[in-house]
Amino acid sequence: MRRPLIAGNWKMNLNRSDAVALAKGLADASTPDEVDVLVCPSNVYLDAVSAAASGSKVALGAQDVYFESNGAFTGETSTDMLSDVGCSHVILGHSERRNVIGEPDELINKKLKATLAAGLTPVLCVGELLEEREAGKTMDVVTAQFDGSLAGVSEADVQKTVIAYEPVWAIGTGKTATPEQAQEVHADLRKLLAERYNQQTADTVRILYGGSVKPDNAAMLMSQPDIDGALVGGASLKVDSFTGIINASVPQAAPCSINKPRS
Ligand code: 13P
Image (cartoon, rainbow, N blue to C red; front, side, top):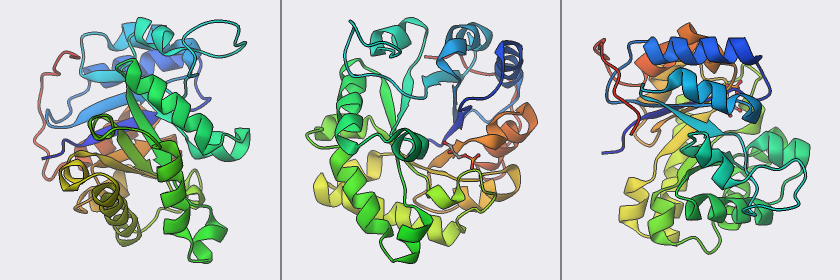
């Protein structure tokens, strides 16, 4: 059984007090025990958010990392630094880094290996542009990103990796993939995991959907057999909408009172 994971990618949003208030609100919220929750603030606020969510089930992730462990890499952040402030996860290969910053798969692959070597969990994003979908190339694009980003990654390590399918045309646009469109790609990704690794790996790896996930579409998306959670942008910036998604991610979520400590 794969545990659902609902991850918030705060991107380059919020100031310090808003980030802390959001983290505190989530730490205090009643959410189902069986759902893992992750927030990924700007690096500038990782420390403050870590303190605000400390002792709760809300895990902390970064939105990117550099692959070298230390040294003269101006502007970059290492895995050690992220661990030091309490991160357990790192988003890698987000479409905004691929398409806006221009990160290639080879660089994402180095970052992913460094993340795993440091004992952190990568959340590897893949997804096609609108024109690629319209040209019928969705799986060609996603397969190339999968192969490039995971080149040389062992079965044991890929089992520790979370994959996020984020169709670029659905990010921040209000246009969500239909549950059927998302499920189709998730099933193909799971097939790819079985082909490149084995069935046990395919059954183990959590595959999240991202792209305009909101409280009112989350339940339909999460009910698909190969969708194991969500990577949420805009709707993760408010306690109510993010907890709405968390609560919608399990069928008939019973409200529960006690948040578990972060392990
Ligand atoms: P939105 O939920 O704002 O569409 O963003 C999705 C995303 O990019 C999460 O990483």
